[in-house]
Image (cartoon, rainbow, N blue to C red; front, side, top):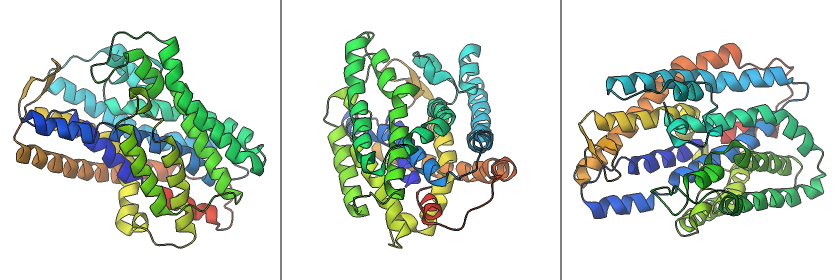
Length: 375
């Protein structure tokens, strides 16, 4: 499932390249994919809480947990950060030292300035949010483990309600200007709803609660096909809801139902598309794919020449629809190749060296199967 989410982010960022010379074609592509990236990121955030809860072991220490998680994300992040800086310099773009430092140390999501937030390898802002998830997880898990199983669905509902209240708070508390060029909201409001680590923590907590629901036998038995159907319906709804709800609110419930449904189906031995060996491999390289794809799209596009786009920013040239689609396919393939290299030569060696658990293994359990299914 993870690679599907990463691919959704890819097609969304493809729309930001303004590849299509024909305005009508470009508009249709942009509208169809306008919330795909938001859905993909939300999926990752919920999934993080779910997987970490299922893979948590009695006797583990906070130090071991932090070491394993940061061994997973930091090596890939540093490599792609350096690549981003080199590419900026190759294309004679300015590098702001303060923004670069914020990006390198994964604190950029705390700064409501998109010049900082999207500096370097722009997609790394989500790692800044994930870092807070990891730091808070041992404490959240203790709190959520204290919830009686019979009350878990109630707290899941409260968490969803908190997500739905975030856009209302953004509208009520934050300035309405300057307005974001992509929709009727200010930069500050969008940052609060989409990039601010504190507000995204609700999705992570929801993932923890959902894992506890499955582990305590409280799952409602929803099948994968129904989960996919609901997720698709949520995606369609995200194209039409009030703008600030398109980021998270429209799909929070469908995604929260899909993740446990797929995990439970795998545990029960039900063959699904996501359990195929090819999908398992794609899931393994999905994190690396996520980190490299925007660099490939942007600088691969620029390599064919640059011009000022419709928003007055430097960008690549627009092409006919067949050429634009061919570029997207090629960029996807190059991103996949680079993600394989990053996974094989950076992520895997570091995880073998620093990512091993140092607690005694438990006997094989359904929990372990679930972790394998959704990773």
